[in-house]
Image 1: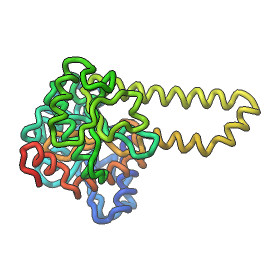
Image 2: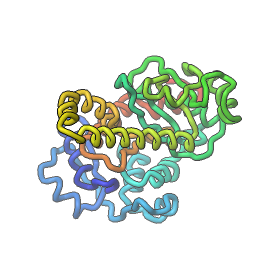
Image 3: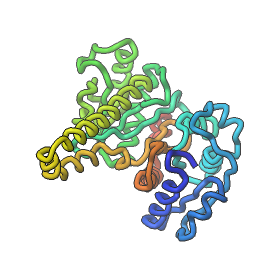
Image 4: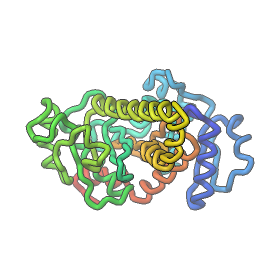
Length: 323
């Protein structure tokens, strides 16, 4: 029920995913009166679970999760906690989803702060996992170390990278660069059981200077918004310039295949959803403006994470008892 295009786009994406993967049961959680008319041609692996409340985009997250036990988000989180579902996906209120993860599912033992870990586009189409990009505005060095470990496991289990390169977002590549947080985090990450490649500058993100980029939520969210804003501005300026005259329109026609490919590379829908790593259950946050394609990709992403036993792998690594 959450997101700019809910529930129509969410349902359509779920239907597309259900048809693509018949071995997966998809449970749509929300208002039966609104969802049932959209399911007239639903395959047998689609289920509906009624939820009579909704957490809005402007509600205070913790208060909303505690008070609205019948909301679609809380009901979905409860299904995961009770083992009735293997994962949950939401395009709704990000803060409320993080509160659901913490209050309903709880943290993995040994994890102090969960992290929101979206994929960022790279020019080679592989993508870069960045965490934390907004779950926690303040972090300690040990939190960043845990982000590096969780991000490395995620890329192994979900993306099949045998030895993900983990980098620390910083203002320079030298090991003594940065503030007190990054200097202390550098030492901890270097001692962690990961392939730590040192500091990475923001200018190297699009060229994939690493496979996992570690930062605190404040800096990470600024990086994300700056990249989104830059991409939007670039495409806006290109459109304006290419429609200036008949000559530029002709040039645009010639360059159209390349421009479309570049736009695809920068498109969040291609990457599915951002996992909330560190909570005791698989939780994925889709972009608020997700369409059916993004929802289907989020389901694909969840399936791979479940099959790879992502949560169990993170818990085992953090506890020191590897699977």
